[in-house]
Length: 116
Length: 115
Image 1 (tube, rainbow over the protein chains, first blue to last red):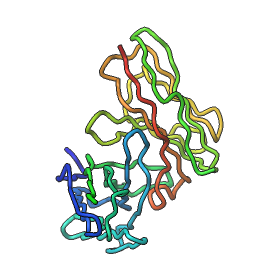
Image 2 (cartoon, rainbow over the protein chains, first blue to last red; image 1 turned 135 degrees about the vertical axis):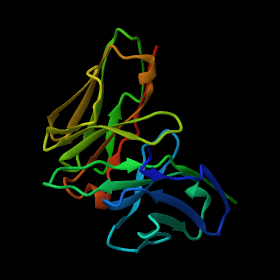
Image 3 (spheres, each protein chain N blue to C red; image 1 turned 60 degrees about the vertical axis):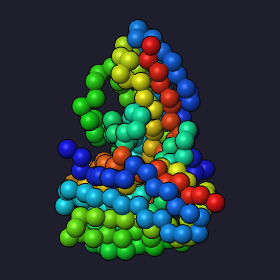
């Protein structure tokens, strides 16, 4: 069963408007949530993260919102640019105990297309 | 240097071949990872090395054998693979303990085809 879900396989947005990418999770023991961006033939690139004790984190045009009661997070991109067209993955990191390095669990991704 | 370099970028191998995937980083990261990604699927963790020691093996078949010869290098040795092992193999690295907050740095991957 998927612990991190991105239910929209694709999203199309006009340049200059807001892009909202959504992610749901099932495990309350996640410590951090992260967003990655992936272009074809490249590895995922880290965008932004949020701690499970926060509800918002902002970095330039990117803002991530976390709603713990709904087990939902979203990535807002404002304003959207054609160069933002890529696949966006939501990922979650379980709490680590004993100092061990943990795992990132990825959603299936949402393909964002920003049209000029 | 803020990159993770993976070689080769593409690899075609027969089911009886032995090959190796290589990964290198010079960011001082002491955690390194192998992920496997099939088409239209999310990346799935295979192995984690922390301070050059294997810390996580996600029940990966023994035909995949990881090796971390030093803090900058990570190898994945392949032997007797099956066609269903064809996928994009991604290497990543991070600082130990803070990878969740600051993200992993991924390489561009090796596209493996088993024939």
